[in-house]
Length: 106
Image (cartoon, rainbow, N blue to C red; front, top):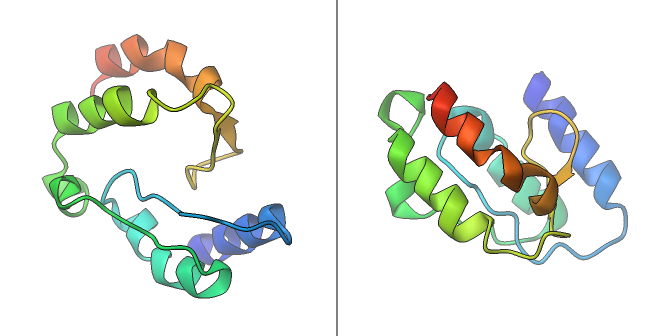
């Protein structure tokens, strides 16, 4: 049910705006299980890099951190991010927290 509520919130937040792409930043099941419906409802491509591999059991923490640092944090600070966990945010709001995420570990 939580995934269903997330989809509804994303669809409501998007409103009538065009979604160019909905990027899966990693392959956790809570993201991947809702991706097909999100694509159906909002019509964006939903890419996931093969290096993001599968669910939590197979996620490689250094690869995830590298992807966030090198790919996501390379985006403009005002880029909106909707992670599926909590409220939306921006790249500029999250970037200063990278060191504490690394220190906290997986």
